[in-house]
Image 1 (cartoon, rainbow, N blue to C red):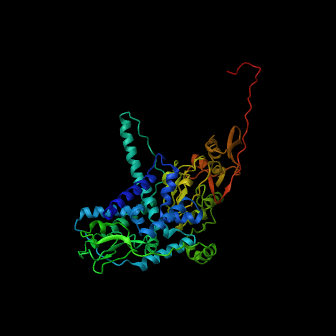
Image 2: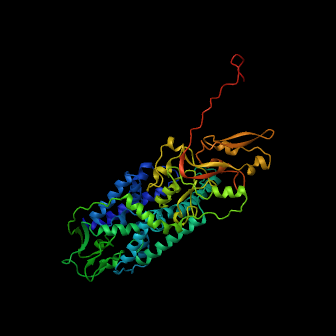
Image 3: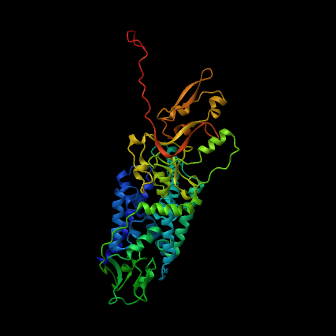
Length: 519
């Protein structure tokens, strides 16, 4: 059975890796929402953050990961974590290129790793996920797929569609790419190069030096029941186990294995020619209760650490001498607009790990990676980009798939009254005023009829906004033809409100029933 451990690990890893990858590349939205929740709940950091927000399926996934680690060590890193599997693929390629590649034991830099972990945890508690987002494995893997792989797949799909279309075969439809910008391409590419180089040259050094999930699981795995151990009776001290250990945690000279750094890949067991490696229980541990999060302590940490983190938050606009309309327009766009279900910008920024699962799943592609709109602390977190598209009035996908509670699930009826912002009309910029032409694009696209057309100068009509029924979906802003800035745009609600239901007007027939049929 021991000889099958690596094969089992590889099979489980491929299932999770392909399943998670498909979530980010599912252009047809055929993946059930329930499967999104199950797979997302098995990712450590998102499940941990969501558990702090609301107890649910993610909490069950978190307990599963912790119990799994207490029983078998850091097998999560080699089976469930998609970034870990990606590193294994790079390591496999490196082995193919250089078959003489060997690893050598190196004591992990626990001081650096745990110091980074404490720093990430501290800033996260104080309200900034900036550092955590830089190194969290699931979110980084999601950004790689959403911003690098997904556009490449879409371009290939569109090229293939053009080829088929040339021959009159309309079996592949074109998919637009609306959420890509320079920052969203450069950052994931830089991270891919970093992880690729580290994996190619040094194995799983990222997991044991920079990864916050690796640090937490490394601490727990010190107390795991089952461990990989060296059987001194069968060991011939050939050193093969050390040479194949990609975590570099086996010292063949002292016959010791650093269980905190071991990622449970079972390469050593599979490669040992004498059966000198085994996977068995070493000692019994008394049950340990998970620490309880106390809001008082959280508030204390927040009050002491937030001033330091304040340097990462967006600064106000010092331009006070601008034109009145220009100043009003800039002031309204100072705050980005967070998706429905995120409650507020503060809640969203404190819980979003920028995994971009919502971006890749948004059917209208209105969600785009931010750059500095939320400040440096919220870099890469999704924002509503009404220049690219608008929020579908009936859509609730982002809340149903968010793995960490930054966007909470909403019923379709409730979502239709969530007010993420309010439409604001700049009369002097409207083509009705500037060019004396009819338009009405904003009113035609408004799903709640918060924008209606009223009489204006002779036979023209001009928009009028009822912000009480406006939900801030951005349909009006997206449809407005005015350039370079829109004549109607959505002002952000830093804290989401509740819009009133639009009044339904009954249309009475205008013909006389006593007369002949009107046509």
